[in-house]
Image 1: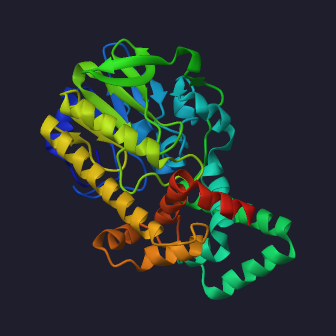
Image 2: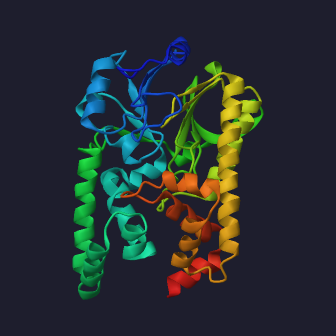
Image 3: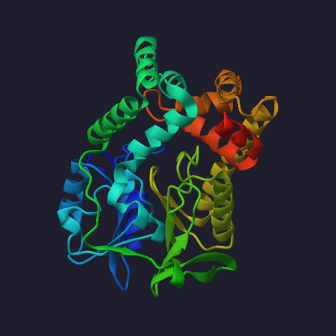
Length: 368
């Protein structure tokens, strides 16, 4: 656990179930930007789940590994979960991930380069750099001038800046190209736990990888049914999804509710999430899932009402102006997690809403 703060009740419950945790969280109720790393011991194997990113996390993993032989499980390919997965400490391990990661494994920095390019393309220079507070008017004016004079130079500059920011915020990236195992779509099977149906793979007889897309299309949750232990990655979080390339509101809603169904049937006693402390106890897990789903649905309904009040669904700037000026407490809370000077979560959420629920608006934008 964290060196400065202890969570003994959680720590003891995890240990009783063969789970150990490395986290940057220092206080209950708080979150962390870098994903938690979990160590899992089962009767049939040992695992490191989400080795995360950064030199510090690698040092923590090396210092605290409770076993000598182990495989690595990736919930998804976002950098804060996967960037360390090809580091030397894992050379003798198999890195197991979703089949869709195969097309991304050699370009993990796409979380910065491709995401930034997509956002600028969809939101415009001011929409991305200005509305989120990343750059001031002078720099935005300069970027617009460069973009107008030479789109190719602008694209190269944007790519270079994205790579620099990636190195500063994430550190070195170690793709697991030498020892990665992609689960096979041909072996994807119907699975049933407590009358709740999923699609996924049996990693071992006591460990399953469940398809739970939404946050990202290659997202997996790892389930140990005998211990009622679920590693849910980033599926359960607010505001979710925030991936403009591979996120889906519809899938997020579907699989959050499926996870709640399993919990209500008595199938989850420990919910190990990625950016908060694990939730321990059946009733606590159910309450937590219901709370997150309620917030998600409130956000969805609020955004839907705002968009419905806008006659031109292709006017993204106009829609976002209404979102940013909305006086509800929910929107104010969302804007606090909108990370000024970083990626804009609410902009992505609105973009995905338009894409999935207002197709005519997105088609109008595409044809402009």
